Image (tube, rainbow, N blue to C red):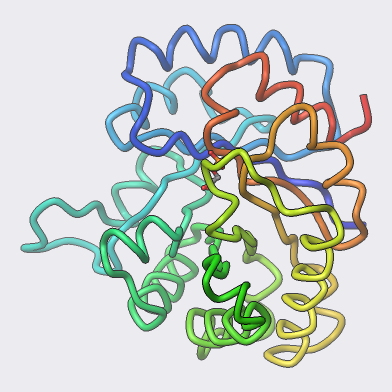
Length: 254
Ligand code: 13P
């Protein structure tokens, strides 16, 4: 059984002050919820405060939205895995489509980051997903295969199982248009098939694959009931504590 994992990607939102009041209500909302892993990935400026407030919580893990693949040095504007580890960050989102599209990140760069994250004890949440143009051309599985093979190149099977994959169709991000449960399930099954080719079937079975793209309290339960959907990576709807806690509860059927 794969434990469901629900992650908040706050993107470039939330000040430190907003983070403090959010956590207060979110914690109360999920107090009685068990059996699901919760991750919050705030902007870098709120990580230290959130880390202090969480105090090593087992229920809510800290995530980062990005990192560089070097440990330190002359890399203006970047954040290293060592800096994240110091603040007890456990997960790091890598290769989000906004990083790929707006900041030109390639599979080769993402691959370097994946290797460094694993070497430093951070669990990568590796994002993959096709654009609308690619889906309309019937190329979604080909794109997923290329992104997975490129970003996971050289990662040994024993490390693949600690990676989380997020399938985020670009056309569903921030558009209010989510993939249907069937479309998402088909894509997730394909991701698992590629993971089995890269490693082996047993390893691929252990990997948690999140769906991301306009997940809301109203559609979370049906998406999460699909056999290969093991969680959600939530953008817009994670910015509101009550709504995000409803999505978390959908993962455990409460
Ligand atoms: P939305 O939930 O706002 O569509 O964003 C999804 C996403 O990109 C999460 O990483």
